[in-house]
Every structure is written in structure tokens, then in C-alpha cells.
Image 1 (cartoon, helix red, strand yellow):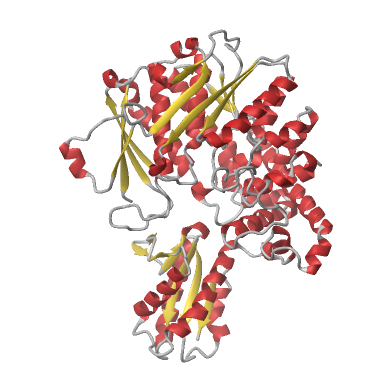
Image 2 (tube, rainbow, N blue to C red; image 1 turned 120 degrees about the vertical axis):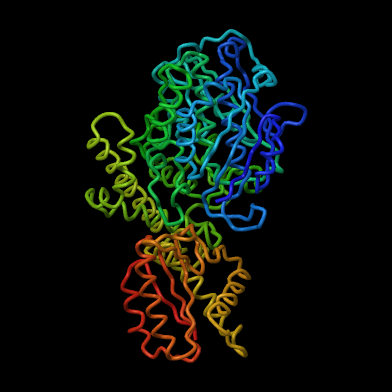
Amino acid sequence: MKSRLFVCGGLSLNGKEAQAQTTKVVELSSWGANPNVHIQLEDVSRAFAQNLSPRLIDLIEIAAYVYTADCSIRRDSAWSRNNSVEPWSRKLDFVIPVRDAQFWGNSEIVEKLRGILHFLSDDQFEFDFKDNHQSLPVQQAYFDFSQDDWPFYGVDRVIMFSGGLDSLAGALETASRGENLVLVSHRPAPTLSKRQQDLFQCLQDLYPQCKMLHIPVWVNKEKKLGREHTQRTRSFLYAALGAAVAHSIKACGVRFFENGIVSLNLPVADEVLRARASRTTHPLFLAMMTDFLTTVFEDQVTVDNPFLYKTKADVLATIKSLGGRALIKNTCSCAHTGFFQSKTQWHCGTCSQCIDRRIAVVATELENDDPEYDYVEDVFCGKREAGYEKNIAVDYIRHAFELSRMSEQEMATKFNLEISRAVRALRGNKRESAQKLIEMHKHHGETVWNVVTQKLTANLPSLLAGDLPQNSMLMTVAGLQHLTNSWIRYGQQVSALLERGVPVACNSHKPENEPHLQEICDGILKANESKLVREFPFARWSSSMTKPDWSLDGVSLWIEAKYVRQKRDIRQITEDIAADITKYGDNQKHVLYVIYDPSHLIVDEEEFSQPISKRQDMMVRFIR
């Protein structure tokens, strides 16, 4: 895995360091004549700035540089000098000037920082902190001051306020207890600003007896640095910003409000693996941040999430019970805000967050408070593009329906790894915590089942008439597509492409050998914009290494193409597949075997396929 080096804060590499680099060096700076990372905290008091130590300014800058670097390198794309395709994970190296070099240079601190970022992103991080405090700007460069009369010192927690339903419910719950509120928002772009401001004003109007402060924090970068949509380190930046505010006003910590379905984020599909399953408020991340920030501040800091055992429908029920239903229209839940073109609609209607929101709205009978015109596509009946948009809907439904039908014991067995990891990070009785997490997911599954059943019934005439788009959520559910795993669906798509293309490409001239066949297949797949990666990745089995002909990491699918030219080839292909079954199976990969047999030398396809097809994670297709 090759690394990308980020040189920050105006530093320059010496000749030896520059010569050692084999990939592009990116310069990042949050100050100076031409900064490309912009940080601005608005509506803060001068007393706030006086309480912010150089170490905390370092923390904000480090988090901003990491977030910017994360956004600037696309995953699964050609970014190294030789245009090789990299896997999901990346390696990011940083050289950063700091004001408190003795602290940041401590190996224990670096390891904690690396551990947090690796857990969030599945990437590898290295840090080289340079003592350059004399050339760094004074802290006031990042602040937009307001009036100095602040009644907010000593609040229990600083609340992270994203402008979504969950953070709104948390703010309402806190205000209903008569507590003052300090809300911190991260604004990567101006597009979210007005909606957050409107939501905050509505919150103030609803609870005029409470004193409320909203601190927007602008952290963004130049557009030319590119955009990686996953942005897994954003929550580290978000928590660091909240912690800096909390420390300066002597709060006890930082509070996220996020429903437990999102926090735990069980994999709903094979597309959502490893870091693809966001860990923004995962219990382990919050525990790691608590430990890290306590070390940074040299004082106890708590980072928590009181909504861990709530579903999205529970969150909506909280808003409803506290009289906040009129505020729902000012919230934004979409994962793609800023990515689609509409200037008036805030929800795409196709991402998993939009699905989750709309199902919860229907479940709590709040549809009139979440206007349909705010969605580019209707979540249930709108068109979905083939691929991600369709798959995420199908897999969301499949996962929820499975949860609704599972016994608690089956759920505990299937998701043992995820539940155990979450529970280990929680305080209190581990068994009770695990039970509450299982019950919450069971409740979520039943909620989705009831809502989808309700929508199917309401739209039955349109379904029977075929009036709904074929890839709409309701049409795919009615067609039982949610009963098929995503890797099988993708494998079927690949098979269909090759079954149509290979016979035509090889009509007059048969491939010379198997590598030649693979080249032909590769051309067909690329012509159809396939994201399959050629001969990658390598996997270890015993003392040897193995690799597939193609792979797609997103669905953990490996593909092997075999070429039967003569009768005697069948024995060798059978032996190769037998070896692959063991090696690939031990590496927990789904495998598609594509057998090109133009002369029909394999007479009994069923007999040949039986050892492959009997395995749930493997399938075989023949091309004639």
C-alpha cells in the first residue's frame, strides 16, 4: 500500500525527505497568504479564546488537516503515480507543525490518535509533528467574536448539533429539562447554513425560557483538492471542535445524539463492509475519544450518546411528545446534501438515511410534518438508478425484514462480533446492554416491516397496473428481490454481460489461451463501466499467496474465468477450482466461476457444478 504525504502549515521537506517520496506530496495550510484549509469559529466570546490553550488549537488544526486529506483522496481510484488501482484502505502520512511539540510527539498520544482514525476509516495513518510554534499564527485568527456577555459557562455537555432529527430531539429533550444549551455545528459548505439557523431559531422560539448558544464552525477546503464522499474522519473533526468548546466553557464533555441503529451500524448488505459502515457514534469510538480527550485536556472529559438504545422512530416519537413536530421540516437527514442539483429540495430520497427518515416518519404518523416536496424522489415509489440506489433500498429492506423474523438468539449469533465490540466499550452490565441492543434492532425490523406492508397495501392498484418504476422500492419488494443477496445480484449482472459479449467477440477467432480470454472479458466489462479490479487483491492461504482474476471489494466478490479448449482441460480446471474453493472459502470470499466452453465439452453441467453450487457463497455460469 503506497502512502500519500501531506505537508501542512507551510512546512517544507528537506532534500532527503522529498527524494524519499514515491507518491505525490500535497501541501495543506490553514493560514498564510493562500490557505487551502479554512477554519472559522463564529459567535464566540473573547473569554472563550482566552481559555483555549495552544494544545487545543493544535488539536483543531490536526483534525482539520486529517479531514481535508480524507476528503481529497478517492477510494478505489487511480491516484498513485503508476495509475494502479488502490483498495478501500489508504495510507496517509502527515508532517504537521504544532505549538506543543512535546505533548504531540509522545508515542502514546500518537498511538491513540492513529487508533481512533484507523477505527473510523480503516485507513493507516502516520504523523510527524514538528516543533514550529514561533511561526504559527496566534489563536485569534480562527475566531469571529460576538458579545462577551456569556451565561453558558458550566453547562453539563456541549451538544453536537448536525441539524438532523436526532440532534434536534436531543436539544429538545435537554431544553425540556430547563437546561441551557450550547450547540456546536460543523458547516463544510454554506448550503446547510440557513436550514441550521432556521432550526435553531425555531428551537429558541419553542423554549424561550432557556438560554441557547449556537456556535457554527466552518471547516472546508479548496475544491481542487477533490471530494471523497465517505469522509469517515469527519466525526473526529466534529468531536474535536465540540471538545475545544466544552473545555473552554468548563463543560463536562461532549454529547452526540444519534439513534442506535446508525450508531451500531450493523452491515445491511455486502456493500456496507469494513469502514463503509460508518462509525461516527459507535460506542467504541466514543470510548476511544473519551480516553484521548481526557489525555489531551489532562482532565476528565466524557463523550457520550444517550440515544444508543433508540431507533429513528423512537427519535421521532420524542420530537412529537415534546411539541417539536413543526420543526421537522427544518431538519436534514440526507447523506447526499450538496451532491445533487436541486436548490429547493434537501433530501435525495434514494440514500439509506432518507429511507430511514421516511420510514420513521410514516411509523410515527408525521408525514404531514415532513413534506414530500422536500424529496427529489419519493422514497417508496420513486425511480432508482440501477446499482447503488436500487441495491441500498433492496438491502435495507432485506436486512430489516431479517431482523423482524429472527429470534433474539439468532440475532445474537449472527451479529455476535458487532454487538460484542459495542458492549465492551459500554459501562454497566454487559449482558443487559447486549439485550437492549438486540431488542432495539428487533423493534426496528418490525417497524420497517409494518411501514412497508402499509405502503404496499396503499399502492396495490399502481403495483398491479405496473405504473410504478421497475426499480422503485415497492416494485423491487413486490418482486421479492430483497430475498437475493447483493453479491449474487452483481454476479448475475456480470454473467449476463459476459454471456452476451464473449460469444460475439470470439465468433471468428477463439482465444489463444486463458489469459487471452481474460483480456477479452476485461474489455467487455470495462466497456460496460464495471468497477471490477483486475488480479487484485492478494490473499494468503497457508504459506502461499493467491489472487482472483477480478474482484469487487464492495460486495466481497471474486471472479474466476476458465477456458475449456480440449477435453483434457476439464480435469485441470476441476483441480484448480477445488483448490480455489478451499483458499477462497477460507478467506470468506464470494466467488463466481465463469466457464467458457464453446465446444460444449462439459456434457453434464449439473454434475460439474454440484461441488460449487452446494456452497452458499459460490456460483458457476457457463458461456457457450
